[in-house]
Image (cartoon, rainbow over all chains, first blue to last red; front, side, top):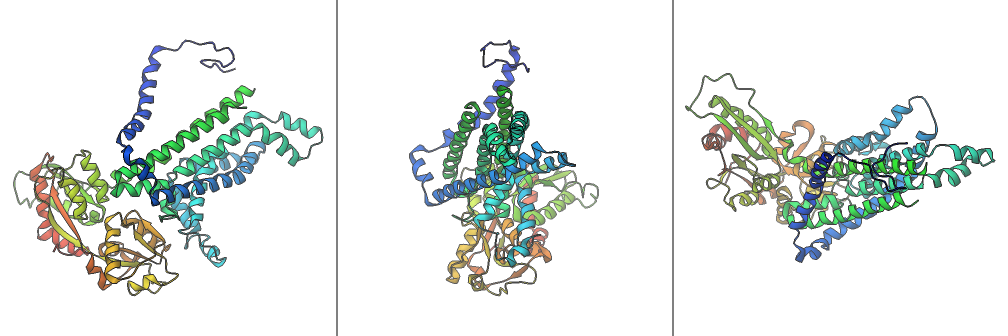
Amino acid sequence: MTTGVTTRHTGQRLGLPAWVFVPAAVGALFVVLPLVAMLTRVEWRHFGDLVTSESSIAALELSLRTATATTVLCVVFGVPMAVVLARTSFRGQGIARSFVLLPLVLPPVVCGIALLYTFGRLGLLGHTLEVLGIQVAFSTTAVVMAQTFVALPFLVVSLDGALRTAGTRYEAVAATLGARPTRVFLRVTLPLVLPGLASGAVLSFARALGEFGATITFAGSLQGVTRTLPLEVYLQRETDPQAAVALSLLLVAVATLVIGLTRTSRVAP
Amino acid sequence: MTRTRTRSVGAIAAIGLALAMTAACGSPTGSGSSGTSSSSDAHATDSASATSGGITGKITVFAAASLKTTFTQIGAQVEKDHPGSTVTFSFAGSSDLAAQLQQGAPADVFASADPRNMAKVTGPGLTASAPVDFAANTLEVAVPPGNPAGITSLRDLTKSGVKVVVCAPQVPCGNASVEVEKAAGLTLEPVSEEQNVTDVLGKVITGEADAGLVYVTDVKGAGDKVEGVEFPESSAAVNVYPIAVLKGSANPALATAFLDAVTGPHGQAVLGAAGFRKAP
């Protein structure tokens, strides 16, 4: 098996070259220091007022609402996508996998432009949607779509990896014992990869919460409708840097919570 | 086998998280320096008509995004007039630029789209002399080609079903929008309040919005991608553009030469051709 530095079972420690600690410490500092710097800029006396202003509350509420909807959509579409990618083989599967992962590496603004030219009024499907009476532009739906577009790959990657690592042995056994595919999927496959699914869902949620570029390009920015927390932070910065810092801290807090959840879900089973 | 599985899931989760952080942090901060461009390449060689001796070197001009076309042109002229000089620009929102200057960004000249953001720089004493007003801009309604919603006045924007996009009140163009609404005695109900005028224009160009409130110069700069609808109430909000040489300039001679070029006849002609009004 792979050589870990410590193995969880024995607690045995392997020697590390002393020099690795230097770049490791520099790297850690680079990540932590900006967060500390932000903490020093918060006016704690006004923190409560700043994060409970009407616009802040509206933004937080919208962010949580849309990120939750996005996570649900990611699970609904992402789980089948991951299963198809991990459990079947077809021509062009490698290309399909790359395309699914594309939004992960694309700049969010590019995602926003792509969505605009698909679902926008003059986009590819825009006319069809208008005939059906569906108006996507400038609506909360557009925010959820933008978030889903960028967050979906996180769930697919996590779950695809978990499924392939878990292997098909138990599923094969269940099938030979006469279980139908749906039963195998629900009773064997899903429980096996539940940790992967959980961390994938949490990551999708986190990504949706932080979404900025695609949202501002595709959905616009209006309080209570499309102006999520990151957009509010960016706008507040124009006139009230203190409020921007306070709101940023709020996002950091939520992100920390999410990382905490990911860690628990990784260790638990 | 359980251990292998959980570890690899963890690794994927960690990578994913890292990417999420990059993506989340990357977009908002990108706008600051993305507009940087140099006009040094075009006129380096034809140097026959040097009007003053000895001004050479390099300056960086921080200018409001709406000045991109005109200032690039004026910069090229300055380089032509002063052989051996280079004028580099950083175009962004005035408040972004003011914030960068407050944080010590090295620049020689600052041109703001409004006095409010210039005050952020003069306040802490970062300018070498009092700012000079060099241009003014007013609002106009931008509509997609063909004007599908049939907009002919500011009041038409309040008709039901018309999708209007404006700047958020926190930024200069949004502040101007509030002023003209007040002057006209009406309240717009925009479908979106954008971060800057470029985003408003973008929503109109792509046809997402039926109309947007932008500057006259934006309509002119967009060519045939949008049409402009003038309205009398626009005179209620005249945005004045101030320019100043910065105290930290390493090349005050060239910086002053650039400022003079902007306020001089050639610069004023360039600005006028782009739709800017004379400073009051």
